[in-house]
Image (tube, rainbow, N blue to C red; front, side):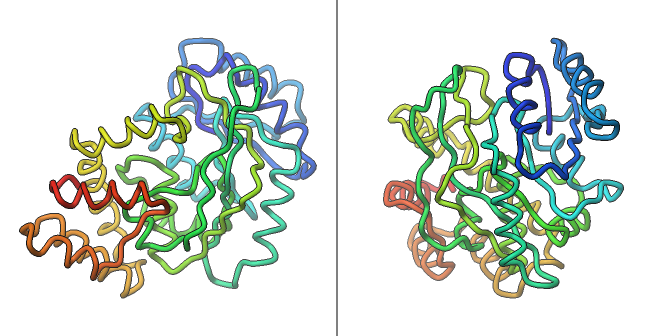
Length: 299
């Protein structure tokens, strides 16, 4: 769990962890310099939970992505499975049970595996207001390069996936969950997307990353394409992925190189290279956004 100034909702999340049907877990909380009562709340739960159940660390103070990766890339942290946990959500009681059962039944020896899924959107009082989109297209590197479908607050992953994160180390990336999605699919690992939500994803004004189904949210995403934000993200993605090129499959590396070439190509070649690379998004709106980004060289 990466925390920073999360006092408003932190106790709800900690209570939901305590209520998990799967009880064999340890929470590692890395606080990134909170100036409210976040650390006090963590320490109060640390005192009332069994010894060793909650470990509190000092974060690197370089943003939420680096904070999460500082834990995920730490070789001293060892378990059978790992889960990213946001400070302001609420987990349904069977979240860990469902995820671990899925991984245990489907992971292949020597392969990275990530479980993720939909979330139920709730307001500040945990009243349900909708669900995240249902994504049905395959979770592949050709999708991961240009879209993140795997919310970090739903992710549970195996030791092979953590090994990969450790080998590459902390990277500068738009988001820790998108990075894991790209890295694991690029290596030929498996990403399972559960259509049944196991997390209540709280929507509030202080959310670093919010839901994306409203008209306003869709407009904001479109604006990010045209104001250069998406292209900036692509710059970061490419640097991070080339730093991990020794782990990528031959096909993934070819796709990455085509993607980089397409971004700098003349208009007459841009769409041809986009087609050759086989990049795709999960919705028709996303596909239109991708084509517009390619047209205006904003990808």
